[in-house]
Image (cartoon, rainbow, N blue to C red):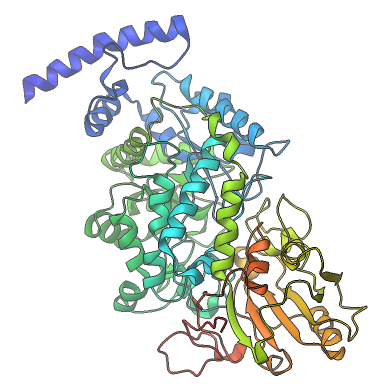
Length: 614
């Protein structure tokens, strides 16, 4: 074994010189034929390639691999100089113009910076493609996770993961900060719609999306690295406060919040993101027991752990990060730090911590081993640039058809008095509501921008457009945003109302969960006409509507369907029967929060409820 190791190193030194000469002459990637340096040889096992590369790396190389700046605060030249291992786009951070081709150009620019380093270690580029490649104008936007949880269809979710991966691949982005495997236990939480459901079985079942994103094997065609987030317990914080404290015994943490991550590890997820939140007062970003002992050792996670955006900064509760926070996070088991702006200072702090022994070099080596292994598995050393052949898949008809099916499967019919639904083709229907003809409203947060926004933010089909298509050419489908103009000549009225877009803590609720006055006035005008009223809720969570429900003839929860509003129309007009089931318990009023299956509280609609036609 010792002789073989020496022979490998000797061969590597010779081939390293040859590889350097090849790079100097050709300026392109060093390929496998014939006889590249060992870490550049795809025929060798990943473990051998990592060991060979790690032995060649300086401390500067290793620190760079653990650093992830935001694209706005780093240049390709910085990537070269500081050996940066990863770059990210935060929510809404996009090149100009925001086109798939511009994304590919941007990615390739950063990658060329990485490949200009002495060891030519490629960077990996991360983005929140949480319901499709949502930062990119023109991409297919699928329903948010809460809607996918309502489908109870893991095979469909796997296909959505694969479609998202294809669209990402065309733009070069090869690391998705998804899926969110939180178990949402309080609907006041601003990230409720990022959860597949309130019981661990639902997010665990939907980890099939990891297989869709990563493919049958990481590194295959249109394969991107998936991220299980946010580890651990972010859906169980007191009062539903985002980034708050989950104050529960370890037995409950393990029974409710850990199972989806255990399933994600079984499916080979490549990375795990740590939560901003705390467990019984201890910030997750410094929780060595849960990150190292439970995730890495007990669950056997072999990928790498990444912090959340500026998450290390929040360990001590003060603005900005310190060297002590950096040491605490890395020693806890975080392998890569998402440090968008102050990344140079992070490198300095980590270098100092290693040199004075506050962070063992062995911990840095372990982090690099994990990061490099996933890069090798992903095939970045052989195929580092954007695969533009997949640009044609961005917003393709095939992917939009898949999204439309997902939307239809996610609709939950909660009330249908006197069989007002399905609507009859060819009839007279009056449509109202701010969410009826608005792509931005129906897509929600994490769509083009971080918080999302009303308006024609990207390409797609609004719910109103879908209704007009489904009604047929002989039908009358009138529209007024506030309901004015309706009369008794219509067969039915459809009010499409709900929440304005939001994300994360900006979506936390503490002062009620009902519809706002504008929506209630719109519905009131429709009811006053005397025609049957169908209410379609576009929302990221259940809303407090029990007192209003008796005056509505039908109620459909549409969640946040994304760009394919025709899927909502498919159910309203009966082209697809409603099959969605509630992934969360629906409260009688907001004072019941938190309310979950089996807690003894009497809901308006129980977990799993959902009607169908006939």
